[in-house]
Length: 140
Image 1 (cartoon, rainbow, N blue to C red):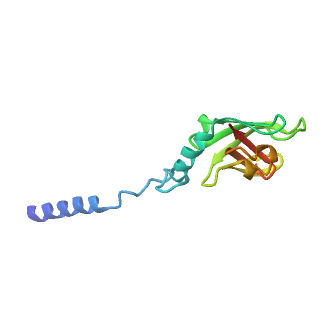
Image 2 (image 1 turned 90 degrees about the horizontal axis):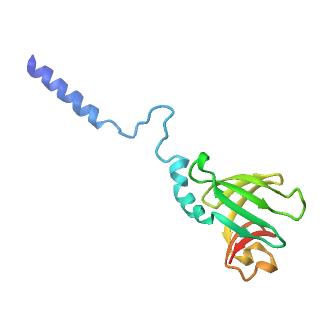
C-alpha cells in the first residue's frame, strides 16, 4: 500500500511539472501581447524624442509619456499656419512609426528624408519625420 501511495505521489509530481508553464492567469499579460511586440518599436521611436523643425515656424516636440508606459509619446506641435493648428497629442509606437490622432484625423509619423516630406525647403535634409506629403519636420 505504501509503495502504491509513493508511486501515485511521484506521478502527480511529475505530471505537475510537465504542465505548460506558459499558462497565464486571467487578466495577466500573455506571451506575444502588443506590449512585448511593441518593445522593439519604441526602442526605435525613443530616438525621435526632442525638437524637430518644419518650415515657416512649424515644429514638433516629442516627449515620452511616462505615465502611459513604454512606446507612448506626447507631441506638442504647430502643424499649420493657422492659429488653431497647434496642440498636444498622444501617440503610440507601431512597427511603422508613431500613430496619433488630431483634429484632422488619424496620422502616422514615420522616418524619412527631406525628399519624403515633399517640401522643396527640406529636400537636402536627411533626418526627418513625415506625417504626410507636405508635412514634415527635420533635424540638422
